[in-house]
Image (cartoon, rainbow, N blue to C red; front, side, top):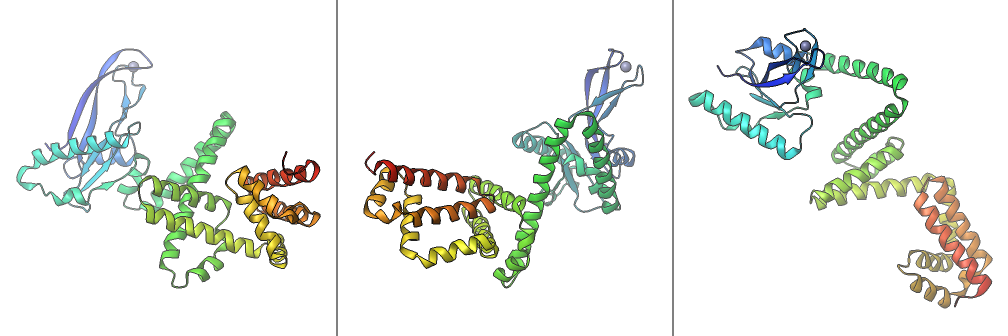
Length: 325
Ligand SMILES: [Zn+2]
């Protein structure tokens, strides 16, 4: 027999009697269509107490599905409360078991083509009609969410936030893929500027950071460059920002010195710039800073607003009490 289970002793939460539960870890789809049906129903690891017939929770276990008649041959679905490291160990262990059982029939290349499927998506992945299965899953999730919204509004909000972030990441990934394909990238960005909303921009930032943490420097820089290009295009389409840019162009020197003052890395450096350029202590410079703050506000750039306001306060103080103080 190629399917493989482990036995574990567990206590029934309803009648508190212990029983031996069978936890399937390897399922041969051809040998045990009954087990495959349970995977499709998402009931394979659900436990039922043999004494009182009550549900006794769900075992958190990995699962390897072997499909002798279908591609990919191997589908691995990790346990849920496990680390990536543990998942890798589980997969290696179950693959080794199947390889031993199959003997001559085993092919190493199956491992390369092995599909990793999160448990939540497993029923859909194994369905004859994955789209319908996904739709059904989305409906069930929606119902569960509605229920949660009534029962536990706080948990609901957190979950909704997480779900929105996930959807934004998905949209960001899709847009990046389309951008990759686009021949005229700037034109693509202009045409899809509306789709790159604040949530997608935040997701791009997160994606760039994740790529950087994984050592994918090139990918991280590419994603950051896309985000920067979007910011620039938005700025171009934002009337306040455009006015600001025009104002800065209109008085190039003042704007340049103001910029140097704001982006200086230390306060000592900022002070040196003010000393060298007293025009920064004029009403004109103050007004220009006001425009910059307004533009940052319009864009919801909270950090920018804070930075600009700090520098405006500093310049005003210099005007009152002198640069040295
Ligand atoms: Zn029981």
